[in-house]
Image 1: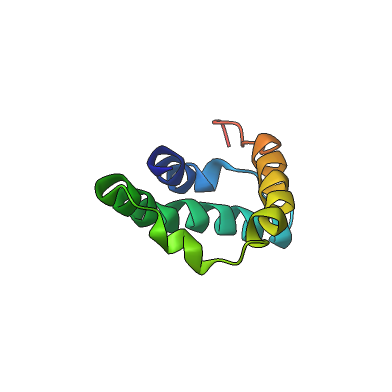
Image 2: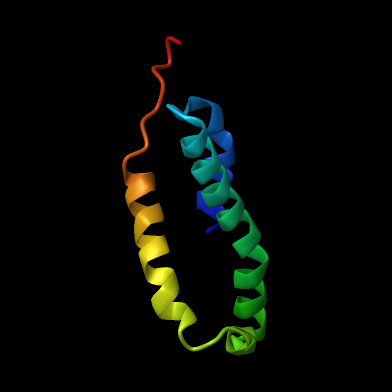
Length: 84
């Protein structure tokens, strides 16, 4: 997650954003990675994912299509040529 967050911020200007919605989704993905770092660090050091119980049981099923969409979005990213 840390690597994904750092690289997402570094390559922001190299990613081709054909429309505003694309820039917004990429921004959401970048912020999502960045904001999840403290959660992962806390879980690593405490060894306890107790905060997960704050989410309803159906949350996991509801978030799967969103995560699949973000994965497909990330796999289809295009980058500008370095000459530009």
